[in-house]
Length: 112
Image (cartoon, rainbow, N blue to C red):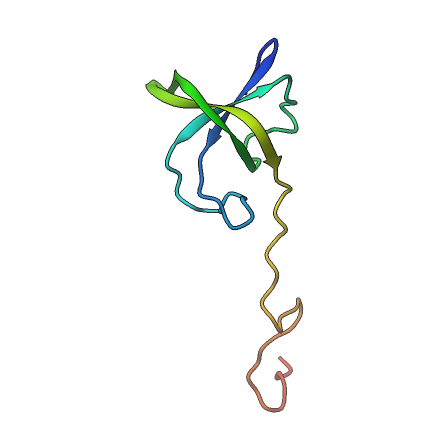
């Protein structure tokens, strides 16, 4: 993230979106782009690893480095965006709860 005088550039790793336009977890990326926002973005709120969806126009290409490699970033002038909340932890399988043992005995668990 680069906060400039009148705009912020946010480097985004592209991922396919699901039906609600949220990035699909674990989906393969096809590259990176720079999202240009008018004004200031707080680096604590827009921290690395947060999920974001942006809409806008591609306005050009900017060459920056990824490690030592020169990378051509498409620049998107952001018209709208959604910073997604953290995903809830996965639910346990049905019929399972902490402390339950599946003994497979017709008379219950043996007293070990």
